[in-house]
Length: 326
Image (cartoon, rainbow, N blue to C red; front, side):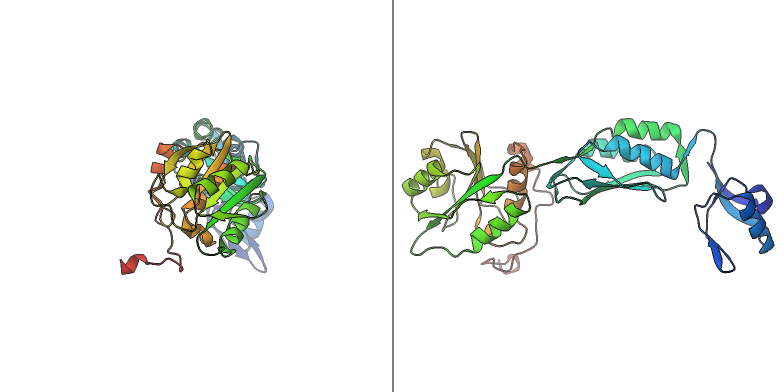
């Protein structure tokens, strides 16, 4: 592509680089100039204009953006029509965004004029939420670079929908029944993913009582919210899961607030021990874990370790000891 100033008489078929006012009308930047346009420009006294001229091996910005978006998106995303070199990609339902970070990095390294910006990996989205925007910055780019970027980013963007439809929350009590705050906060989180919450279950804060409740739970995903914070892998929550016949695969996560979370399973059903901050609807580590688990991701030690960078989240107002006071 060639870019620069040319005499008006030589500009037919080129792309106008900057908007130009013509009396009460205006030629917009990006407009493909016709013979009539050139006559109007000359009549208005313009002798030189700045244009982009595509070469035989170039794709214009909209063709390139549409081609790139088609390559990047898996079938569970929809994309907008191309305009001004941009195509937006949207979720077709609730879930978490699946982003191949390495592929996106390679895609963006092909040519600075070829770009895609995405939400973070595993970002929770609702139906119609934007997951990425493809933008071709210049008015045209070499076809060979478009082909390279398509190959690098093939299928790099997708959506993982919820796998489960029902959940059980088991709460423990010490001297009195816990408030409904924790249940209401969890219901809000589950509603966003289309997961129904079973009837309320509250048991004594004792290992045997909690173990029996875990075994009796009917939800496809089981949540445990204890009256007292889980402070050790052998505390009431994790130990109750083991006694129920389940396994504990993770205790503690590098996300704050939300450190005191545990993850395990009872047979094929995930079990998530919620931290106390999950009683608040504010973002915390439990959101990252439950969203990914509900959408069918198997989380291992490497996945949890990777949560640390970016895992310092906004302080919640109900935190007993705000960070600044420690």
